[in-house]
Structures are given as structure tokens and as C-alpha cells.
Image (tube, rainbow, N blue to C red; front, side):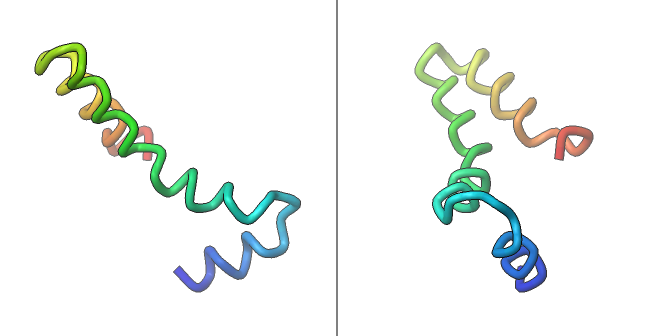
Length: 52
């Protein structure tokens, strides 16, 4: 985690981008508002190891 913070401080992004990217997969749980099947699909796609 310290390496990530060190590298991120040398990139030309605003400070809020790092927490936003870190929490981005959690937005996939909003798919459950469309039902359990769609929610499970969104969640599984967001947490798939190939996409990580």
C-alpha cells in the first residue's frame, strides 16, 4: 500500500482519484437494485480476477 501511495503522489491526478478508484468495484453492488440476478452478474464481473 505504501508503494501505491508513493507512486500515486508522483502522478498528475487529484488526491480524490485514488479513493474513487479503490471504491469503484463496490459500485457494482448497485446492480442489485435491478434484481438479484443482475446484481450478481455485475458484482461477479467487477470482482473477476482477469479484470483485476
